[in-house]
Length: 320
Length: 317
Image 1 (cartoon, rainbow over the protein chains, first blue to last red):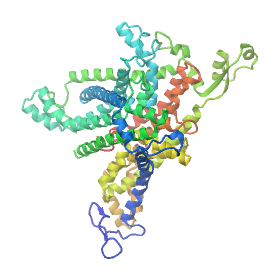
Image 2 (cartoon, helix red, strand yellow):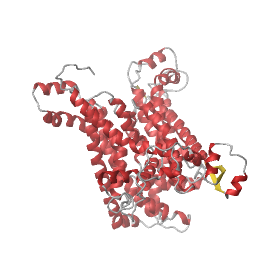
Image 3 (cartoon, rainbow over the protein chains, first blue to last red):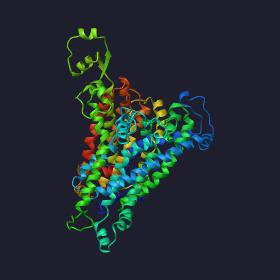
Image 4 (cartoon, helix red, strand yellow):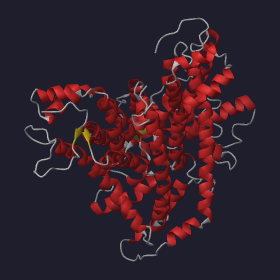
C-alpha cells in the first residue's frame, strides 16, 4: 500500500475523484490531514501571539495613540512617527551606542572564543570538564548576571574593584564601573563578553572538529607551515561556523535589553542608552505608544533582514 | 574519529602544546567562574562579612541570608525581645540577635512557585506542539515547508520590547495582564520555534523504516507515530524540554515588562530582594544561588546537546 519512497506526498492535487491520490488507506485520517492537524496549532499560536500583535503594532505606528490615555483621543498621523524617528538625533545617538556595543562585544567574544576553541581542540586531559565550566555563564539568566555583577562592581566593597585595586594600586572606592561616564560603556561590553564568549567558543569548537584529519595530513606532506595551515585550512573551514555565531550574537546584542537595563539602565544620563532602552523608555515610561510602535517596526525590519541571512548560513552549515 | 598515536602527527597536539593549552583554558575557566563562586560564598556570610573590606574569602558560616530571603522581620525593642519565649529555630534566633522577630513569610516562595508553574506549563505546551509540528515537517511533504519553517524561526528573533508593547495592550484588553496563563502562552510562543527546529533535527535522524514497517503491519499513521517515533525521539524530546525550561526559567525582559505581582517570576524579583532589608547582599546572593542551582544541574545534564540547542538543531556534534 505504501510505496517505499522517503517522503509521503500530501501536496499532490486531488484527481477527479474526491480522495487525494496518495492518501494512505488506513482507518482514520489521511497523511495530509495529519500533517495539517500537527502543524496548525503551532502556526495558530504564533499568529495569535506574534503576528496579530505585529499587525497591531503596524497600525498603531501610524497614529499618535498613547496607551495610558485609553482608546479615545487618538488619530492617524500618517508617516509622521517614522519621519520623526529617522530625523531624531537622539535615535541616531542610541543607534551609534548600540553599534559600538555590538562591535566591541563581538570582537572580544570572537577573539577569546576562537582562541579558547583552538586550545580546547588540542584535547588535553580534562578538556571536557573545563568546557562545561566555561559554558556556565551563558546558561544563566541575564537577570542574575546583571544583578551579581552590580554587586561585584560596588565601589569599595565590590570584588571587581578590589581585584583591580589589588593589581593596579588604585583606590577601590575611587571608581565606579557603572556610574562613571568613561567606564560604563565598557562595563556592559565586559559583562556581555563574560557571558557570551562560551557561545562563540562552542560553535567554533564544532567548526574545528568538523575539519577532517586528512586535510591536515595532506598539508603536512606538502610541508605547509603552521601559520599557513591555519590561514588556508583551519580558518576557511571554521568561518561558516564563526559567521553563524557572529550573526546570532550581532542580532541578539543589537536588540539587547536585559543586561543593559539591569546594569546601567541606559545611564549615566543616556550614555549607554541602546535602542532597546530608548524603546522601553518611550513605550513604558513616556507612554508614546504610537511613536514607539514605529520604532519597534524599524527595529523589527532590521532584525528580520539579519535573521534571513542567519537562516541562509544556518542551512549552509547544516549541509556539511 | 580515529585516534592517531604517531608521535609527530599534525592532528594530535604534542604533549607540551597540550599542557600549555590545558593551563591557559583552566586559567580562563577559573577567572570566568569566580563571580559565580563569589555569589555562592556571599550567600553563606553574615551581612557585615559580605561587605567587609578587604573582601573575606572565608568567613564563619551563616545561613542568615537564606533566612532573610524567606522571611519578613520586624524590629522590636530589647525589652520585648527579652520577654519572648526561647527562639524556636535557627532563623528565629538570628532575628533575635538583631533585635528583630520574624513577622511572616516573604514573597520569595510565591515568586519561585510562579517560575515553576510558568516554566513547566510553557515547556509542556511548547514541546507538545513542537513534537507534532516537527514530525509533520520531518515526514510529510508540506507545501511551502521552507517558508513555514523560516516563519517559525523568525518569530524567535523579534525584539522582546517590540513584542511587549502590543502584547501589553492585547493582554490588557483580554484581562490577561499579570496572569499565569498569559505568561505561559507568551513563553510557549517563544519556545515553540526552538522546539520545532530542534525536534525536527532529532526526528530526521530516526530511520523511516520503523514507521513504514509499522504501517505495513496495519498500524495507522497516528499509531505508528506514537508507537515507533515517540519512543525513539525520547532523548531529543527530553533535551528540547530542558532547553525550553531553561529559557522560561531565565527570561527577564517580558517578565519585567508584563508582570508585577500575581504572576511575577524570579528574574524580575531578584533585584528587589535587596529592597526588603536594606543592603542585605547575603539574601540577594541566597536567592541567586537557589535560582541558579537547577541551571547548573541542567547544563551538566545537557552538555552533549548544548550545541544543537544554541544552533536550532543545525550543528550536531
